[in-house]
Amino acid sequence: MEVAHVLFMDVVGYSVLRINQQASAQLEMQNLVNASSEVQTAKSERKFICRPAGDGMALIFFRDIASPVRTALQIHEEMQKNARAIQARLGAPLKMRMGIHSGVVLMVEDLNSQSDAAGEGINIAQRVMDCGDADHILVSSKVAESLLTVDPWQHYLRDIGDCRVKHGVVVHLYLLHGRLSGGYYGNVAIPKKVAEEQEAMEREASRFRGSYFDTHPEMRGRLAALGIAIGLIGGCMYSWAKVPAFKSAVQTTFAHFAGKPEAKPPTKSGPAHGEGGHAPHSESAHGGSHPHANSAPDSGDAPTRVAVPDLLGKPLDDAESAVENQDLHLAKNPPTGYNTQYGEGLIYEQTPSAGEYVAPGARITVHISKGDPPDATVPGAEPSASGGQ
Image (cartoon, rainbow, N blue to C red; front, side, top):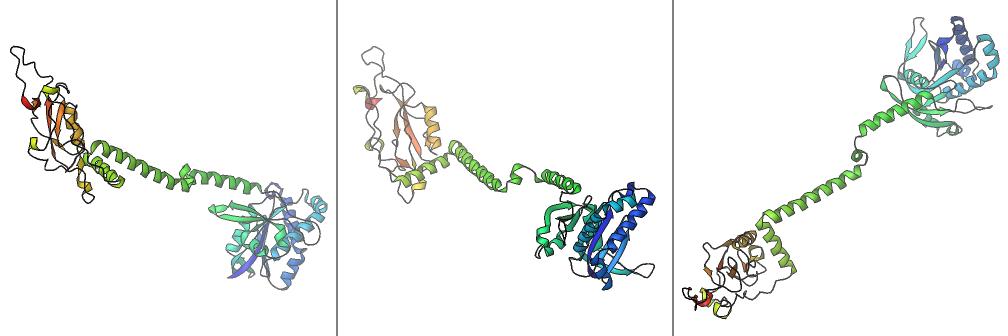
């Protein structure tokens, strides 16, 4: 196994030529190769193999990597100088395309006991050549990357990108348009096959790119963050409306960080019936303060205290909803009494008073108004109860 530098070339339009023209084209190509000084030098050093390949041939060099590149330019120059004579002998213009690659080959002997070579280096050189049109000199990236560091080749090579070849193999190509001593040789146009394959690969790649978020990965993180934020907000809103303990905890926490609230004075009940209302609630009237009541939550146990809602003037159903939202309970069978300030069916007194802080689950006692008291002077009227009842 050895590393070889291969120039693969063939005649463009060979299959449309007549048989005698095909034979003449082969002869003309051989003459052009033999006229190359680079080939003659390599032959004399026994570092050269010419391998026929149908309508073309592979020139295999075991010298420096630029040998096939110089040979390609010499053949092009000779072909241009003798273009009219060649066309006269052939009966048609002679057009060739070339591909250059450097790779490993396996040295073998043919049936005539002559040295021959086979392997990846020759195969890829042929695939590179197949990408070109008439007069194209295409160079694989493996050769080009070595030449780009050496004058004058860096000025003669043009990167034309990837091209997919036989068996789905993708080769990276450079276009050679240069000279040795005279004019410039090689086709400067992008090969048709290269352009078509690049468009096809781009279409295929776009189908696999997926959605907008696949092509913009930075948006995927933002979308995930937005989704999490929406979920948290939605969960908090649902808990606020449906979970009384959550609402109570949030209110207590905000009250704690905002500063300890001042205790509100006991809610004043309506005036007694003799004076247009009922007597105000007092500790002596109910046997002392409520066992769970406190004017304000201590900083140490703030999360375990809830504020008593204001129930005065509310119907019993609304009061039940209000205390349930605070994780509290109404005492069963609330007492009733006459009251001139609050209409029939409305709460006119509550214990503990609104604004006091109690433990969750505490029971709230309320008094329900029976409306205005009857006039005692009217015959048959009920006597009014003392203390606003």
